[in-house]
Amino acid sequence: MKEESMATRRKVIQRMLEGAVFLGGGGLLWGNSIKTNSKSDYVLRPPGALKERSFLKACIKCGQCVEACPYDTLKLAQAGDGIANGTPYFEPRTIPCQLCPDMPCTAVCPSGALDLKNLSEEEKPADIMNSKMGLAVIHKESCLAYWGIRCEACYRACPLIGEAITLNYEINERTGKHAKLLPIVHSDVCTGCGVCEHACVVEKAAVFVLPLNKATGEVADHYIKSWDKSDEDRINENVKVADDDKDIESAIDYLNDDDLINE
Image (spheres, rainbow, N blue to C red):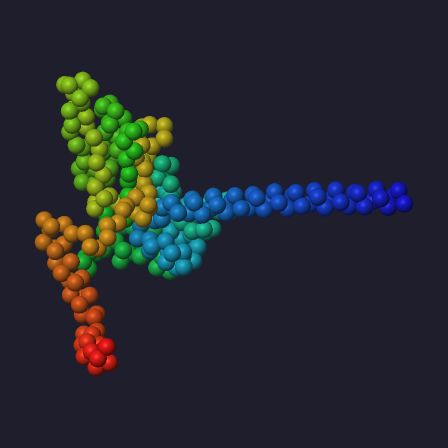
């Protein structure tokens, strides 16, 4: 009887331990899942990539773009990277995109996940400078230039110097006789290559590249730039479309409904 009691106790303890291991493993899996989701939201893809959801559907994880990259910029995501396994990405702080003029990574893609059409404008030939891999964002509180210390590292490194990043001259109010050379990123020109992030001299980069949907805001359609004629045309076109969508005949029939008039 005593032996049976001991055996039962051992089974109970064993099941408790198994449950604890299971829960612990589940917690790790859940934690990894959260980490995966959060990191994948900020992944940077090669030039010409489709929008993320379409990219993930189109990418066949062949790795040809990674092999074609002459700078070892691109990597294939592995288990635990927090990014869809087998898909290409890059980390600009480590190795930025060097904007190869012949766009080898994009040109070699067999599935269309990387598409040269995304690098062309108005039916012109594809141009690597039309890339929109992301957008550089400056954290002013940690940028030396905004402290008043002269630093032009990101500006000088930018492949589109004087276009994607410009320097804004401002009087240093603290000294009263020095100028601050403040870097400004222009979103309509920035390619998201990350060369500026790689060049930043502070310990944790004060300029960093984010995916466009994380780095940019969005204004509702009803706001208008009154000084911009093309924006007025946009509003007028939206109004016209809205009017065209209205069922005028149904409205007239409703107003002429005898039952409604008699009421």
